[in-house]
Image (tube, rainbow, N blue to C red; front, top):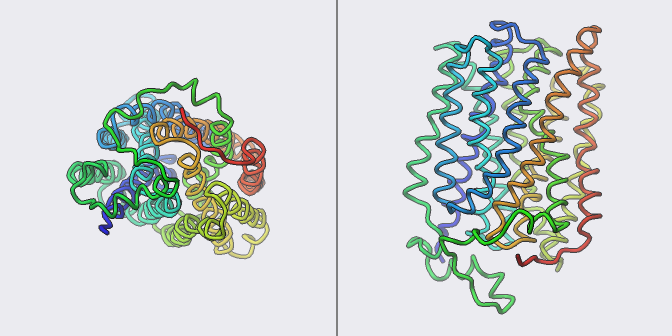
Length: 436
C-alpha cells in the first residue's frame, strides 16, 4: 500500500504553520507598535477583535466556496489572499488612522485564513478513513503550534534587524512558496497517480466494512445543498456551539500572552522568545496525542463519535489547571508557562477532535460548509473574548490592578471546554450519520 495520504497531511501541516505564523506577527509586535502609535489595550483589542469578526463571517462563506471550487482551487486562493493580507500590514500605518489601517490588513488576512481549516478538514476526509481522521487532524493542526514556536523566534529578530515592516513582508511571502508545492502535489485520490489501489481501498475502508459501494469523488461534489439544509440539524448546532465556546480561548493565548508576560513580568522582544517557544512546543504533544486518543475507545468497540466524545470529556478537564495560574505565577513566570501550556495543549487536543466530529456526522460534500458555519461561531466567540478582554484590561489597568483582569480571563479559559462538552452531548446524545 502506498502512503501518499501522509504527504498530503504534510502539506496541510505546513499550510497551518504558515497560517499561524502570519496570524501571530501582530501580537509579538504589540509592545513596539503600541509605543510607536500610542495604542491602548482597548485599541489593540479592537484590531484583534476586527480580525476575529472578519474571520467569523468569512468562515461562513469560505467553507461554501471550498466546497464549490473544490479543495485544490479553494485552498490555493485562500493562501494567496491571506499572504497578501499579511504583507499589507507593512503599509497599514500609511493610512492617517493607523488603527483603521491595521484593521483593514487584519480583515484581508482573516478572509484568506478562514479557508484554511474548511479546506484542510475536507482534504482529511478525502484522504483518511474515519478512524484515522482525528490523528491526521492532530498532526496537521500541530502546525499551529510550530507556527507559534517559530514566530517569537523569527519576528523579534527580523523586527530588530530590518524593522517591523519587514517582519510582516517576509513572513507573509512564505505562503507563495507553499502554493507551488500544493499545485504540484495535490489531487483528489481518485485522480492521484501516487495513490495505488490498496491505499485507495484503505481510504474508503469505512464503506467497505459497511458493505457499501465505494463513492468515487467528483469535481462537482458539494454543490447540491443549502445552508438551510445544514442548519436544521442539531449536529450542526452542537459543532457550532463547541467552536463558539472554545475557539476564543486559543486566540486569547495567541494574541494576548505576549501582552500578559509584558504586563506581569516586563518581558518583551527577544526576552519572551524562549518561554513562548517552550509553551507551544509542549502544546504540540497535546495536538498529536489528542488526535490519537479516541482510538483507545474506538479499539474497545465504540463507534467513532462515541469514542471521540468520551475522549473529549477527559480532554475538557485538563484546562481547569489554568485556574491556578494567578496564584502559582506569583512564584515564577515558569509556573504560568507550564499551566497555560497544559491548557493550550488541551485546546489543541480538543480542536483535533471537534473538527473530526463533522466528518463523523456529515457526508464529505458538506464538510467544508459545516466547518465554515462552526468557524463563524468560533470567530464570533473570539471577537467577544478579545474585545471584552481589551476593555477589561484597560479598566483594571486604570485601577492599578491589571492582574485581576487576567485572572478573570483565565477563569473563562479554564471552564469553557466543560460547558461546551455538556451542551454538545445534550444536543447529540448519540451519533447517526446524516444524508443531505
